[in-house]
Amino acid sequence: MVSRISPGSMPDELYFLCMLYNIGATTVEKSLTLQEISHWTSIENEKVKENLRKLMGGNYIQSSLISGVHRYFLTIDGIRNVLSMYS
Image 1 (cartoon, helix red, strand yellow):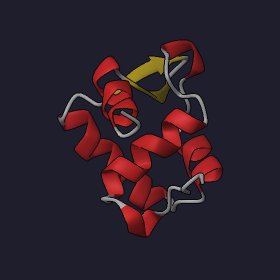
Image 2 (image 1 turned 180 degrees about the horizontal axis):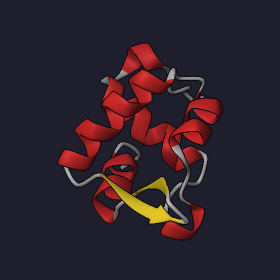
Image 3 (image 1 turned 180 degrees about the vertical axis):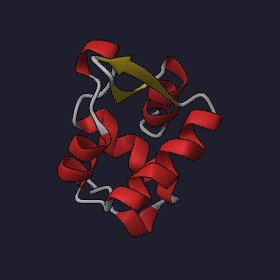
């Protein structure tokens, strides 16, 4: 049986990390803007900003400035955190 990841089944930050991992924001080349993250995760911009701030403080997400636009992606620590759920 496959269990689904849902917002109520884990802390917001971990759910958010899982969502970013699932949509592929795992390298600077695959990084996403705040608006793209909001669109793909169906999470409001303000909540996305809050999650990004918290997770960047924990070194789980990194920001890159590309052509004047901030883009976000998971760090190695963020990827490890997500993958540790499956082990």
